[in-house]
Image (tube, rainbow, N blue to C red; front, side, top):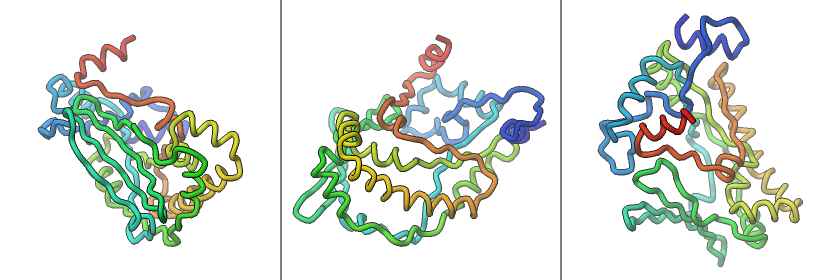
Length: 248
C-alpha cells in the first residue's frame, strides 16, 4: 500500500496497513531550504533532516487554496497596499477607500517566525462595519484555476494527496476585527453581523460549488475564526526547538 492509497483508504474508513502519519503543514514539498530569503525559516540548517524525513517517510497532505481567474471585485480599485521594513521586520498596510473614509489594516512579519501578526484590524467599531457593508460587491465569482492543485498532485505522485483549503464565512467576518471588538459587535449588533456573514457566504458558496465541480473527490479543510483569532500557529526558527515542543 503506497502513501496515497493509505490516506484515501483512511478517509474512506477502509482497512490500512498502518495508521497514516502526517506532519500537517510541514509536507516536504513547499519548504525551500535553498531559498536564502531572510524571511524563509526553512533555510536554517536544523530544518533539513526534518524536511527530508517528511518527504521520504510521511503520508503527505499538501494544502492548496484555489485561485479564481476573471473574477470581478470592485474593492480592488478601492484598495492600496504599502510595504516597508523597520527593525528587521516587514510591515504591510492595506488602505480601503470608502467614500470620504479610509479603513486601514496593518500586519507585521518577523524574519525568525513564520507567521503574520495582525497589529491593526480593518474594522474597529460598528461605524466601520456599516461603512464596509455599503461597499459594492462583485457579481462574477470567476473560474477556478486548477493548475496549482494538479501540479502539486503531479509532484506528490503516490506519496500523498492534496487538501483544498478554504475559510468559512465566520472566519472572514471575524478576522476583520480584533478579538474584543469581534465578540462585542457579534453579540450586540446581530443584524449587521449577519449581513456581513451573508456577504461572505454568497461568494464562498459560489466558489465552493465551482471548485467541487472542477476538482471532485478531493479532501477539504474548511477553517474557522479560531485560526486568525484564537491562536497563532508559530513555527520556531530552529527545527530542534520545534521537535522539543512536540515531545512535551
